Length: 424
Image (tube, rainbow, N blue to C red; front, side, top):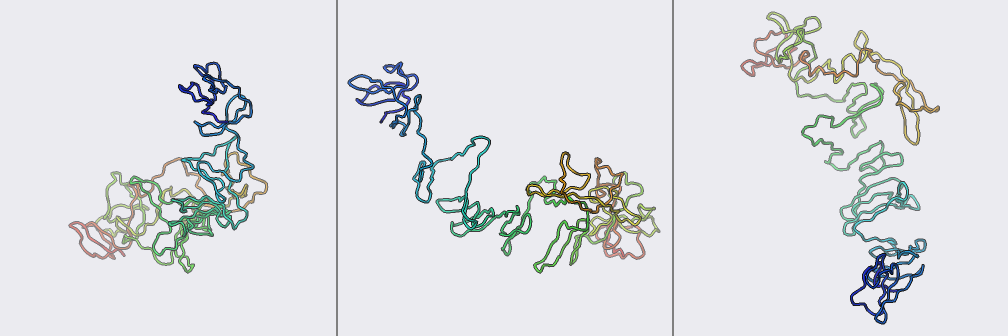
């Protein structure tokens, strides 16, 4: 059946003999009161016909086929199980048996969620999404020739480079097909950086790179280990805060210094650089004429001892020689749903149930000082006026006229009131 249109409400001004219309819910004029009927113009008058369920009609205005279900003209359901191919807005072919040409395609949920499944018959085959530009491939995401998730990119559609790969264990490779760690970055370039980390904020105050271990300080692991191509360890930053290198450390300063506390507390926060000092008990004071100073307040030492990083120096207990005291503690570990869990006893998250098959290992950690209060904000020695770095050995800049030790050697005058001295 051919209809001029569906849900028409107003009769045409000049009807054509034999033309039929499917009326809407509120037709007017000569069609008034004929809602849902078929109106056919015959012999200078309108003939109204009641459509029957199952009737099909082609709407010229809508350019589509519709089916009368007894109350409305709807689109007939597709016989999806029998379609060999389907084109929506374009033509499908034997390779692309489902083809859609549209500005957007929506897959929505029927219930709580929605999954789009792409299957392959064998691990060596491909199940992927291919992104094209002018019908030439530029990026591919999926399982390409194996069961690892990968992203490949191409500049010309023929030469492809694997940019990212994630294996079944969750290890991520960037430029590496067989990642050896949680993240494995590799480049074959002779000059390109393997990794480039940048903070673009000129007001940045955080850590550009932070490495964190859940385990407490220990010499049984490294926070960072750097190797040369021969497999030799060149640098090692150990988990207990000690660093090692196979060569030497080079700094911009020219002296070795240690932190000392001023006997007077430096209450006015004076700049005391270049002043020679002497001990007063375990603290320091400016040296007087005739006294042999131990060192000079340094402005730019190469190495600084007795520092405190960003925590209270007494956070952990030490023995009489200054070495840390250690204690045993139990670590609970288990695996659930492919995820590893590891917690020290006393630090289990609230509500977490430890399974019966959890392993228990004895490890050691530094013994916490009962006087340590984690709620108090600690200001490091470098930012406190009562502490200063005393250069004990090396080249230091001294204010002219300051007391000096007999073993010190004057090198040169650098300003009206400043001199360079070698402390030894």
